[in-house]
Each structure stands twice: as C-alpha cells, then as structure tokens.
Length: 185
Image 1 (tube, rainbow, N blue to C red):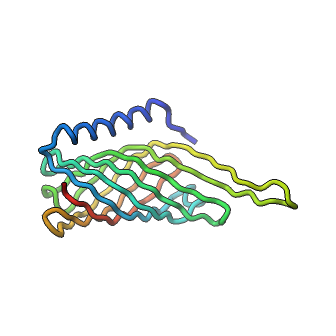
Image 2 (cartoon, one colour):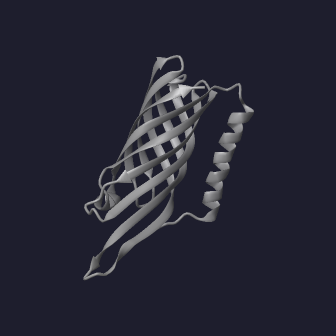
C-alpha cells in the first residue's frame, strides 16, 4: 500500500491556496459555485472489498479563458460493504481544469489531481461479555482524475452539470458518475 508523503500533501495544499488566491486577485473573472451527487463504482481489489458508493460534492470554478475553467472540489462518499460491522468512506479534495470544446457550454474534458482521505471502521462484537469496541484506520492517497462531462445552461446564471470520471487512486480505483448544478457569481 502506497502512502502519501509530506511533500505531496504540501504540494496539494499549495495548489489549493494558489487557486483560492487567484480567485480573489482576479475578481473580474467569472466564478461559480456548485454541488452535486455522486455514484462511485469501485474497481479491482477495491471492488472486491466495497460495494457502490454514494455521496456529494461541493465545487468552485473560475473561468481563466472562454474554454478553460479552473475547478476546486471537495466531497464525501460512503461505500457499502458486505458486513454491517464495517464502515468505509472517503473525502476527496481535488483541483484541476475543465476544457470546453465550445466556450463555457456543452461538452468538456476534465483533469484533476488531489488527495483522497480514506477512513475504515470495524465494529468488534463482544464475546461472552468481553472485548468489543471498534478499530479505525485512516489513510490519504494521491488521486489523478480524468473524465468528460456536459453542461446544460438553464438560465444565464445556472447550469446543470453531468460528468463521468475515472479516478486513479493506488489500490482504490473507481469510476464516478456525477450530476449537479452550478450558480454563477
């Protein structure tokens, strides 16, 4: 199992600070905030241990150019398991860009990097009144996200956003389908 070192965590934090700073410095650029629902389909060994995941995300977008949009995203996803005694969840924190094939509407490609903070809790039952309790483990993994999507403008300041991504996360690869909306600021 690969763990993320302090350098990678620092790198992702610097990227997040850069996007946040850039947003406030370039107030003339158009910004948007959004939220969405996610269905995550685990693959490989991860798929053997976890069932389908469900969750949500919050996103911030900043238009750099008509076809290039910066994206920052944070979410929470809970995965089902075969046992009621095991809880498995992740918090993805990612930054990247959307590239629209037609300026700021329609089809786009998306690429992001970031960290996923995984948490597993196993409940241990009591045996003859002894023991019991729970054991928890947390880890963080570097994430590379590649995908595509489509935005449907509903009004001048509101769009529906549908996307599908492949998330490369060490031993936790998954495919995610997201449906959400965004409001221009």
